Image (cartoon, rainbow, N blue to C red; front, side, top):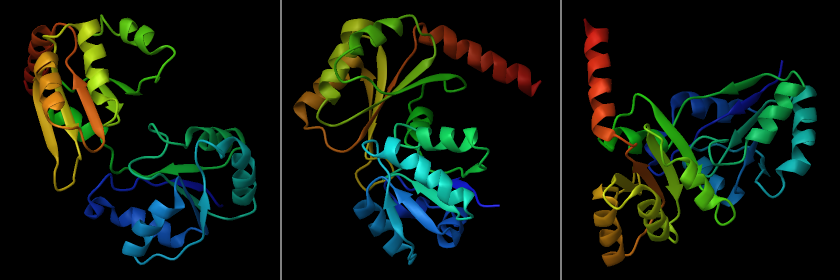
Length: 240
């Protein structure tokens, strides 16, 4: 029976593609891509020749039904995004929901994502965390930040280089300039960098050096020291 495959793709370093992902992309009947031009580069690198169809946030409402019908007709389909795992701050949710509602099997492969490497190397507790992805650009942005003011878990945001300084300034306004933060950019690429410090210190850094690349902001939760101690105690109890 045909199915929909959700296939993560590298967020930068092409060596991060998995052997299973390559096999699935080689075997499916066609591939849905967020940007066919970007995906063509990856497929060429992998020596995979498959029909590509565009599937992005501007057309997904109109295409999900046709894709579901193709799978029901016996065609295996893979969904990929420009980088990382489809559905995580990328198109994919609507298609997955449609397939689930229609009784179509969905198989999601594990693979690259920017969230987890940035979280783990932040140095903040990562046994529990809150993933926010991209904040609303305008309406509801500050309201959402205010709702997170009492969050004790580590919080992860995605941001573009054009808005990262403004975002950090807004975080300082809501959470306080002394709140600890780790900002990673260009993960897995040649110029990968993580800047750690208080919000005030990291803001100063990126005001003096033009932000470039895609950013992951990892913000310490409220009461970081207490949360870190609790996490350490839990690990000791598990070991014992």
